[in-house]
Structures are given as structure tokens and as C-alpha cells.
Length: 192
Image (cartoon, rainbow, N blue to C red):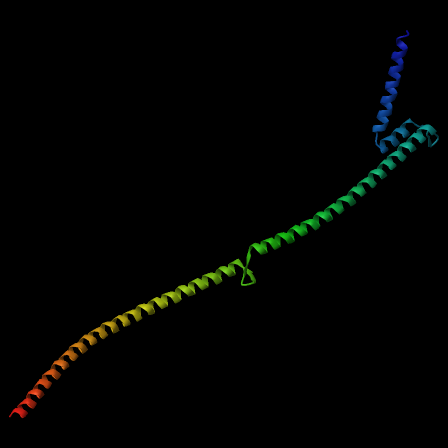
């Protein structure tokens, strides 16, 4: 019998705890329905026990306070997240502007103190190279033409010099022949 009392006491405590836990897990509308079912009727009225009403009032008040604190917590969290989002957007804008500046710097080059796009720089450089190649070709052709003319002039001059040397030699021979003839005539005239 003595062992039966502790067993009954444990059973009663566990049943009370289970009922309390079941009440705590009910939603507010279910709690109102439970109060309505457990209340007695008087004529057309429902009579609710004061303790049940106080318990329900306390539970509703606790639920409202819990919801208010949860709502305040969530509002603070939303504000913190909005601030975080604003900071992230600001950082993103900074990164985007830095990225755009980096891309612009990557796609441009300093040329003669002026910042120009690499494609424009390539066009300028290839235009200069092409112009120089055209000028080189022009001057090579002119040089070859001038070289041909110079070579012809040199060969003509050499031929002319050879002809002049022959003419000079012939003239000298003719002059010497004429001098001999003159000397012979002078000698003939004196010796006659």
C-alpha cells in the first residue's frame, strides 16, 4: 500500500503535467473553444470559472507579449538587414565603379600624354607602320631608278672619258705630226 501512494502521486503529477503541456500546445482559438466546452450554461449564458478565465487571460496576454517581443525582434532584424542591404549596395556600387574604372584603364593606354583606347592606339600604330612601309617602298623604287640612272651616267661618262682620251691621243698625235711637218717645212725653208 505504501508503494501504491507514490505510484498514484507520480501518475497524478504526470497527468497534470501532460494536461498542462497539452494546454500550452493549443492555439488561442483552440483554448477559447476548450473554455467554451468546459464552461457550464446558465439560461442562455455560459458561465466560465474565474480561474479558467484568469488562465486564459494570462495565456492570451503571454501570447500577445510573446508576439510583440517577436515582432519587435523581427522589426529590429529587418532594420538591421535594411542597413546591411544599404551597406552592401554601397559597397557594390563602389566595386562596380572601381570595376568600370579598371576596365577603362585596361582598355586604354597613355600615348603622348593622352589617354586613348587600345583599339585606337592599334589603328594609329598600324597606320604609321603602313605609311612607313609605303614610304620605304617608294624610296626604294626611287633609289633603284636613281641607281639605274646613275649607273648609266657613270658608264656613259666612262665611255665619254675613253673617247676623250682617244680623241686627246689622236689630237696629240696630229699635233705632233703637224709640228714635225711644220718643223720640216721650216727646215726646208732655211736650208734651201
